[in-house]
Image 1 (cartoon, one colour):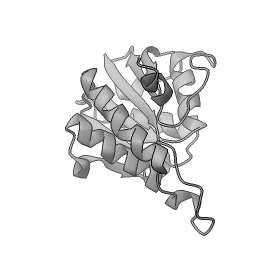
Image 2 (cartoon, one colour):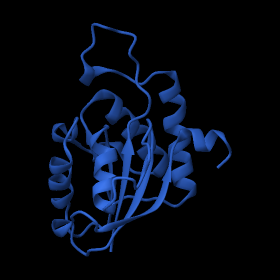
Image 3 (spheres, one colour):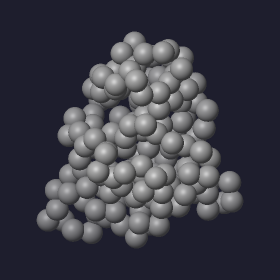
Image 4 (tube, one colour):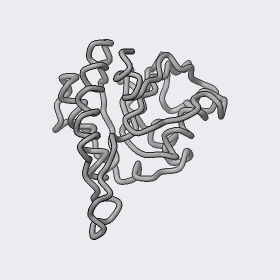
Length: 169
């Protein structure tokens, strides 16, 4: 059995029109939500063996903040340009290439791909209604090999986002 934790980047800053999309940093809400989410995941015992992240500044920053809270070394995060705004097909291909010795993986990236990936793996487009910034979906994968992962092979064991934490969840 494998576990995949899918995390959308924290809220980004749109205040600098000169910056390209790939280079947008986190805004103040993102700077607040990412460490809070990392602490929450740590309390829940989430401990990935491998962390993959989009190279977009907002995604890799979120990955570094949350990984630090989980005790995962930030220099061990695998940065992948292919995750940036990837389709479900590309994301499934990336997941299928995770080292088979690893039983738990965490990915940081973007919508709509991450919402769609979650729904595809669960086998229902209504698996999660929304996937706001800094959302987390923890999936139990019903296969022993990443290389065989496909639609309907997973179940959601947890789904949460910053607003839920602010409400005392």
